[in-house]
Image 1 (cartoon, one colour):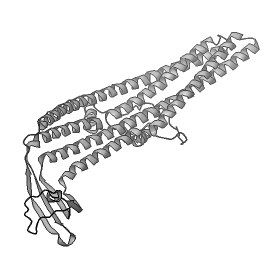
Image 2: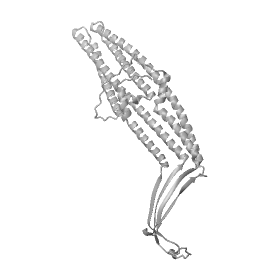
Image 3: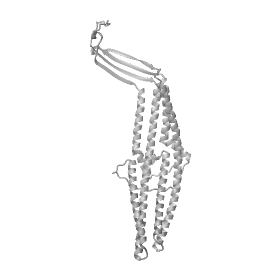
Image 4: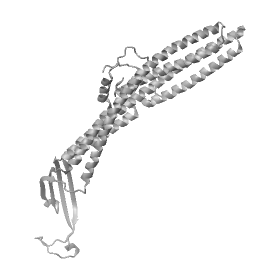
Length: 420
């Protein structure tokens, strides 16, 4: 799919959040745990080597306890205790074990699913980081708007005072202007508090210490008129190929299916080779060598219906995983369609808000000109300025909604973490 790549601040912050957030680090740790479990399953197919030694073991017989029984010892009855030494080494190797092979494959599929969930966690962290950065940009834009409002209110107050001093104005105009100026300053203070809280949230999402420098050098960009828009089916196809949560659901379904096969195959015989070599005797200068080797075949007969219960459990888990995979596919399609609707609606909202802002600015200019000429009081100017304040906020909110909709669309495609 053709997509316009914008190297804006939200994309850079999304990439940083995807790499450094606590949820991403935790997901990576779970991935390492899954890899370790795969190694545990793989170890079942490697040779098992062990050694043992029994030195100075004391043995007693019935004669040492005062019980006389016939003996077969050609040297006479040994009463004991008798010291004995036994040293040996064992090695075993599985040759054929179908359930173990299937369990190994299921563990590998589970590990892949956890890796995909880690990708999904990184993408979710990237979305949170991008949205937190957009919240900071919105707060910065509102601060600029409130500063412009304060400048206008201060200008109106100065005009009202000049007209009152010249005898062509009334004190009510001065009072109105002072009230308007106080209101805009209060809004400016509240907006700065909002900006500070947004910055704290952004630091949290980016895992940046409080004392570390953080530069906000961007502004809310407007929609591009020539931005290409891909078809819905193409975007859904890309989302199904990139979304970590969907791939995790599909892989988990495959792992559950393999685990069910492994449980059903536990009745199959297993074959392994073994060898044992050692030395035993009463002292180190009279040790006798012993050894044994062969091939062992194990066939399960009855284990209290454990295998049947395990097979039923794994088949139920398989059905659950298949249902979740189907539901996740529907969720991906819903997320993409919802994000596309949000992007289209946000573009129209931006256009409407910008048109209203132009009219509000014209209204303020006309009312201010009438007030300067003494044709009307400043009530019309204050009313127009309040309308201008609302229009500015609408533009800021529309731009923020549009950028957040773009982030949601990228997240629906599983591509937020790839934005840089």
